[in-house]
Image 1 (tube, rainbow, N blue to C red):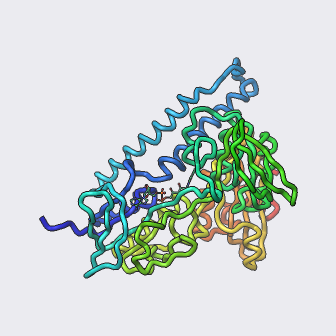
Image 2: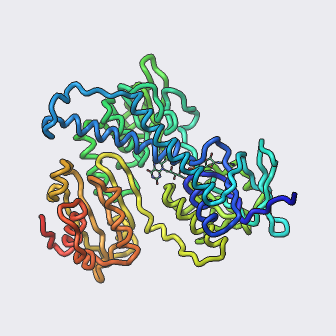
Image 3: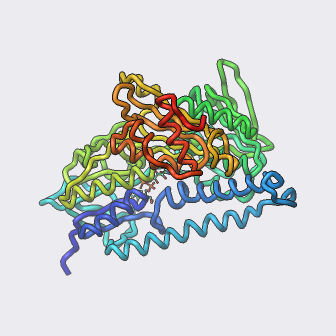
Amino acid sequence: MPETIYDVAIIGSGPAGYTAAIRAGQLGLKTALIEKDDVLGGTCLHVGCIPTKALLFNAEVYDHVKEGPELGLENTAGVTLNWGAIQKRKQGIVDKHTKGLSFLMRKNKVDVVRGYGKLTGPASGGIHTVALDGSDPPSIQAKNVILCSGSVARMLPGMQPDDQILTNIEILSLNAIPKSLIVIGSGAVGVEFASIYKSFGADVTILEMLPRYVPVEDEEVSKELARVYRKRGINGFVNAQVEKVEKTTNGVGVTFTVDGKQQKIEAEKVLVAVGRAPRTENVGIEKTKIEVERGFVKVDGFMRTAEPGIYAIGDIVAGYPQLAHSGAMEGIVAVTHIAGKPVKKINPLRIPNATYCHPEIGSVGLSEAKAKERGFEVKIGKFPFTANSRASIVGQHDGFIKIVSEAKFGEILGVHIIGPNATELIAESVVALEMECTAEELANIIHAHPTLSEAMLDAANAVFGMAINA
Ligand SMILES: Cc1cc2nc3c(=O)[nH]c(=O)nc-3n(C[C@H](O)[C@H](O)[C@H](O)COP(=O)(O)OP(=O)(O)OC[C@H]3O[C@@H](n4cnc5c(N)ncnc54)[C@H](O)[C@@H]3O)c2cc1C
């Protein structure tokens, strides 16, 4: 039997890899998806996006029940959490979607290959060989290769995760809800877990090295999150330089310095959420011309690396955010280019950020500060959820929508939402930016009543000082 020569071999089955595989199949490319683990789906499905959002949903429901009498619910004071059932529900959701991925691979005629894939060097006669450690056959051949090996949680120097010092992996399957938790890092992962475990009753403290929470967001969003977290009883320190993490008789002690003053706090568990390192070692990159910058792979607008025929997508790529939906679209761009079809390059400024803490955060485009840094004269429209009728109905008044528009022609440069359903509401803004919509055009688009999305209409009107509801 002649050996199969694939049109494309994809190394890694996270959202970047599986999306690329499905689209490649749809485009009629002979495709192999190589995965080292027993299940498809990567970080996002097994220890990232999906299980965290499942827990956040439980946390939200529990928060509503705690508001019992206000919502007219009686006898809620004795409601307790069944942690086993919460974990089972979370795993059920993950399992369902894992099965769904296997189905989608079959449907799109993608060959799933179990094994650890490694690049072996440049193509020979236009054909690449991908070595497969511990697998039979020991290698496969393909005209194109897409590397999407994903990322791992960064640890503080000299530390290893265990049952007290946790990363996103261990914290998702704890035996019990900890009484107290210190979260090191206030990016999306840190503030989401802080939100979850605070709702579940833990005493939570966040330590952030930079001057504000969620540092990639607009400054006013960070300020509002800090205000609401204080109100929720989530403790926090910014400008906090962690110096030592050590085991104590009761848990873990963290020594840190703020403004030159050293402090020590203790908790049952510590979550280290200080970012994610690209998994670009031990995948054969050194045998190729692929260029790497601080561990991240450099690519062009079609996701091509410097090695002909080898593409890179997802969390390993330089210049794009480490987000599932970004990786998925990068996958579509790469395989569409491989198939020789027209491709629209990704504009990183049109990739939404979504953080699912309470209150949620959704943003796209330039923050006010970034727009000014780039020399734009800006006009801001801001509308608080306190003045939105649907926010009253759902009992969530914290937050606002902020539109950053260019002063002369009114083009919307960025939208920043903190508040109820912000991660859903942001979709409209992504379309608006993609269509180069102006604040005036948005202000003339009819939004249904009563909806949270009406706050977007009011924010657009607020650019001209003419919000209807405030
Ligand atoms: C707690 C948490 C919550 C998150 N929540 C969100 C969210 O809500 N929304 C969002 O957009 N993003 C979220 N993210 C980020 C998101 O999970 C990542 O951006 C996404 O998973 C990256 O996809 P990827 O395909 O590049 O890599 P990964 O998902 O990491 O997948 C890489 C895959 O490659 C496999 N692999 C690695 N090396 C090899 C090899 N040599 N051979 C074969 N297989 C290999 C791995 O086993 C893995 O299956 C979250 C992350 C975390 C940690």
